[in-house]
Length: 210
Image (tube, rainbow, N blue to C red; front, side, top):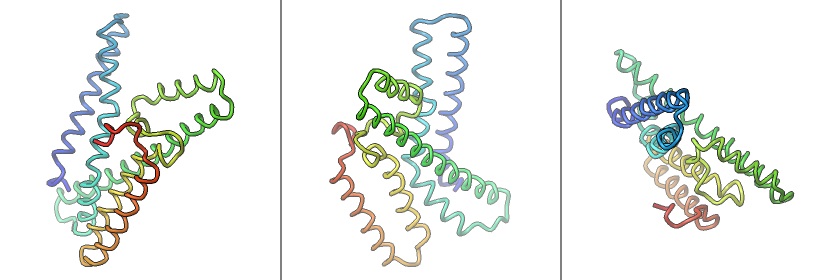
């Protein structure tokens, strides 16, 4: 795990360090009462690095996390400190992945509830509640924005996409001795994902496909 995934781990730590540095700059400017363009610049960058960019890198590399973790959990023998650290790292990334998926469900569910209130009671208060909600979680927009919000399954595209990647790589990592079973399950999984995309068309714009 550690050997195969060190580049992504290094990138994630760089993003975290950059986010902390931007937070310090933004806090300093706020304390000095120096608003304006400099403060807004660091504040905007902080939103990108904490946590949108981190989550984007993590979610797009979740395939490697799951694959190497499943192989690590099957083959580790705890003979060296590196084996133990790698095993702990695997568990940490798995727990982080579960947390990201759970938080995505929370964000989409609450967004849908506020959208439903506007649908049934279209007034200024409910519309403002949606704006306030999006502003509150703007550091996590990558998890639930950019997709159609007509229903849960459309807005939760990233959740479904990540789950598909997780299941795909678990099939590869766990069923290594059953290639026929792998082929059947992967084909079925791909068909279900294609059916989902054709049925729900979750992207707001064509550019979001790339």
